[in-house]
Length: 294
Image 1 (cartoon, one colour):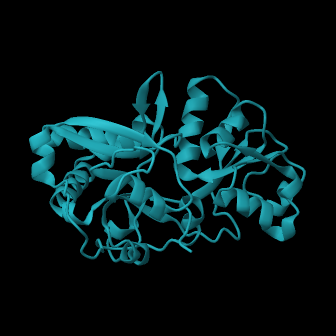
Image 2 (spheres, rainbow, N blue to C red; image 1 turned 180 degrees about the vertical axis):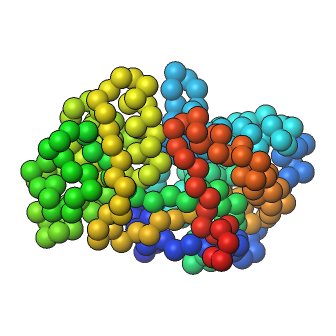
């Protein structure tokens, strides 16, 4: 069985290069996108700080990157939010190479795809490329003297713990350390909400992705919430070493994918990616696949 979007993150390794095998026609290549004048981009819904809807507008890091790419191509942006399915493969099928069974029209490109060589080799209908960020898991704590955010997680027993339900942080807190933290774990819809609960006085410690932690901390500060401090050291027994995030296009849309890859890498070199991430309170970290000696 192929991994779910959340569970997949637990064992990802870094990759370099895009892998795929031939697929059938009905292309959405670069020339076709320019002819139509629209770049249709698939984004995960309720995935703050990457993509979410607020007051009828699609917000987030991925949304801003998509708009920047479309502007560079000289076309309009059609941002399509979609719910995560059981597996990453399902998302790729529904969003990129076939379209959803319930009428969701497939997109030219999908953002926020795990960039991994082994996984990419299995996805014969798509090309995964353009890694643009290195993600990982971390923790954050309410800033009070009773909570040592750098402590061994077994010391968190009796604290109010927060995590996104059915996520790697949830499995980590519930299943590690002999399960002693299980009774203390409170579940939230997203990792962003789990971290925000610290500033609202609803939790003492949260485990989430680094982007969720940093963005929620920035939002909490802007809203005048209680202080939140990030954990500086690694999380003991956290199996995931981190993972790269990239994009996916259909196998027969390589011309579009390679052009988007050039644009995204250009944004990284110019500092534009750093600025986009900073607008959402997140420090941009270059994908491991693009770092020297990897």
